[in-house]
Length: 340
Image (cartoon, rainbow, N blue to C red; front, side, top):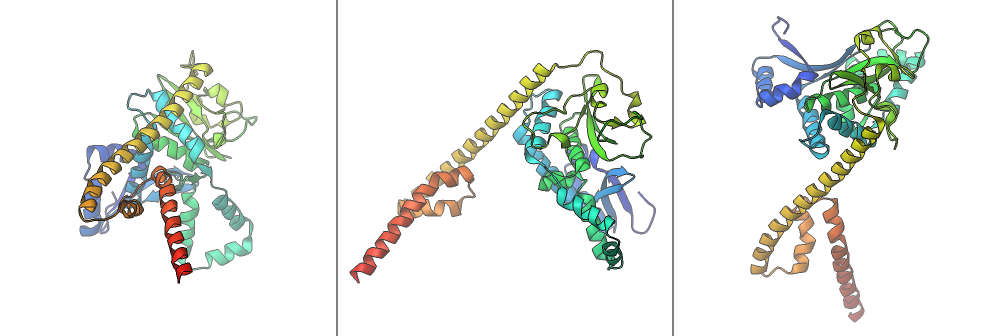
């Protein structure tokens, strides 16, 4: 907290999941702090040589809520740390895309001196908005909310979700290839981000960006030596020791991946069935009231989608009935015109 008339409170994104669990009224208290006491609270992430990402509490809460929704659909409370890790990794693998559009825009601005001159002579607010938009591409916020980010944002998304389910991890900077000087000085020539996750007593490396959209996961659960075959790590990784024996074999990993994928499908099916059951209970009760007032079954079916915020499966279920009803009405109109 800086000592000034307008207090500025800077908090780390990493601590939000634990804070909100311990202090459920945190968001409300921060709002009071900002509105009544004139303070400013920002949550920071990705403090590096390239800058940092900052979020206000509203966006922090929004990201955390979305993260929790995702985790509820992919994490079984009985999962081990490796199963939690693989479930999150698999979700990222299937749902997140690399943010090429903003990446190319940033390169274009840097490459084109004329565009840079026009941009930086423009008004300050527009420049700040553009910089914020460009920086967000490397944030967990973009990855979680819009399913699009560059490598840093993707690694931070995985880190945030792992932190939320109690698994220790760290985002690391590296070079996305093996170069001659195996351990490069920190902040020098870094062009990629990955993540290391603690399993048991050892650290293992993952590169979720390189596996985006791939059916076969090739960049998971790597020892430092294995990861170093196609990545160059900084000297900060020197303290990481090689495990004497890997905690899991490739065969065991594949079995666990199949397990979490199957579980995710089952969890989605169970959730849809639960929603359908609740909707149908409400609908049956409402239908009794409608029958009492002489409203027809067809009218109820047509109005069901408007009354309830039902999901895609429900829409498909009732689409044929809606279509039949519309066809019948059109047929009746045609007959009336012919009779006239």
